[in-house]
Length: 311
Image 1 (cartoon, rainbow, N blue to C red):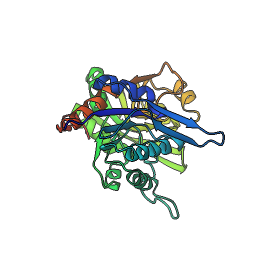
Image 2: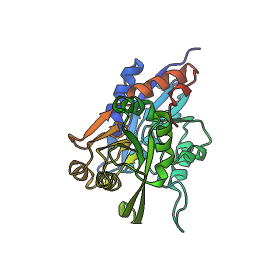
Image 3: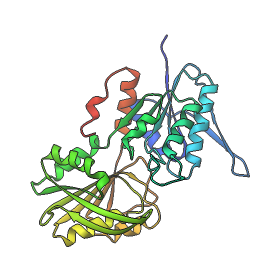
């Protein structure tokens, strides 16, 4: 018996899902979302999924409706007798809540994993988790993809022998060091101290960036406070230019204003999250080809490890 593949999208990721489906060689499945006056909503598949391998594409950035829409679609597919259900979550929201970093707080990432498994997912496909250990929160396979597949070639094109890789904080040092080794460059780290979330109190630079073209690496850019302060600090320390590569363009609050007024030459992001507005300093690289290829390999039971340039 041959099984079919159907790709559907939640409302938050429809544009990306359409690109993924086109690259895969299929048309995007038909989903209708009925909204009630009190804010409740009900997604429904407007075509059969019985016996099919169903891929549901939805980034779960806030608001939480995006996550709940994904859960409802998974449940609907399960109740409609889908053969397998794969949650394709380009941006996995709540990933910053991967541990108890203070008393009496939730481990949000684990809760999301539990909810997805309870809804009925057979597999999860995601990109650049804020914390790698989140893969272990699932009792189903997780395909954890990396934007390095896309970013590495961009960095090689920029490499004039004067590059230095940089991490905006100690948590990103491992990622930046992996790029530095691959590109054979130096490494600099920003040490930051926060008084509260989304607000940097102090920042210092570890490493010599004088006369260098700095490339900042991070998994996400939220309010852009850390990124823009780091860029300013590097320029103060004598850097020639500062570019930033961030996988997930969360870009909330004053992020766009900060980036436009910053010392950054350019911010390169992926389309795991759609941009809310355009900026001359922000360039978007699509992940559609990568996800389409991984879906194809998954269907054919082929290895995807060739995509792991830097993990």
